[in-house]
Length: 302
Image 1 (cartoon, rainbow, N blue to C red):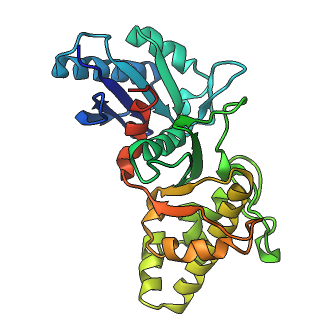
Image 2: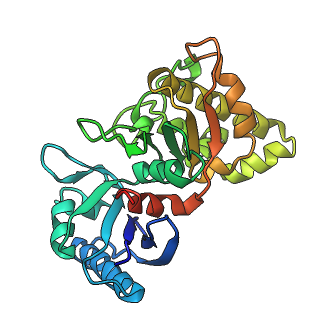
Image 3: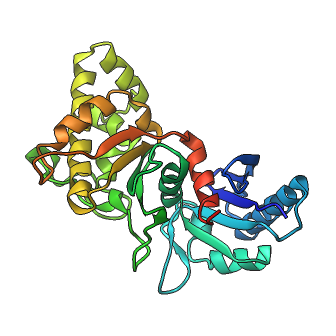
C-alpha cells in the first residue's frame, strides 16, 4: 500500500492540505476557507479535507499519517491551545479533538516549526544539522530543527524568538512599542512588516514593500528606514547565533522577499556574534507560502 503523509496548515483565513508520498513528492493540494470563529466547523473542515484527499488518492480511509500546523502552541500543562491569533482555537483540546475526528494519531505543532521543518527537510536548509527558520511577516516567529527533528522544548515554546526583547537596544529604541503580548520592545515590534511601516511613518502611508522598493531607487528616507531594519535584524539574529549557533538561518514571511537582506545582514553579524568568525548562512526560503503545509506533512518520517 502506498505511504502517504497529509500535511494540514490551519490558518486564520484558509485551511490547506498537501499529500506527500514516501519520497516527498507532492501528490495533491487543496485549500478551503477557515470557518470564522466556529471551532466545531474547523474540526469538521479538517476531517473532510483528509477524507476527500484519501478518496482522491485511492488509499484506504484513515490510512494516511496526518500532521497539523497551527497558530499558537499547545500547553504542556493543560493540553489546550494558547496564543493563537485564531482565537476560536484558544483554550481548546485541539490535538485530542482532531485525533477523535480523524480516528488516528495526529502530530501537531506551531506553524513556525512547520516552516522550519519544511526548509530543513527539502528546502533552503536541506543538509544542515541545525536550522533556524525565522518568519518575518505580520508577526515574527521561528522554529528550530536539529538533526531533522523539530525542537519543541520542555514548555513547548522553543523558537518563540519574536517575544524576546530586541538585543543591545539603542537609547531611541527604549522602551519600544507595546506588543500584543503585553510587553514593550519585543523583536516582533521592530521586525514585523507593519513595524517597518510604523518606523518609517507613524501614519503608515507606505507599506514595507513600497519602502524597500523606494530604498532600491535611492530615496534617502527609505534607505535610512531599511538600514535601521537591517541593523535590528542583524542584532536579533546574532543573539540567536550566540545561543543556538545554527548552520543556517532561513528567512520566511513577506519581509524575506527584500533582496537586500541577504547581502546586508551577514556582514553586520560579526559586530555582535561572540566569535572570531561567523559561518552561519542567512538564506531565503525555497518553498515560500508552501513551507508551512509541507512541514506539517514532514512531522511524520518517511
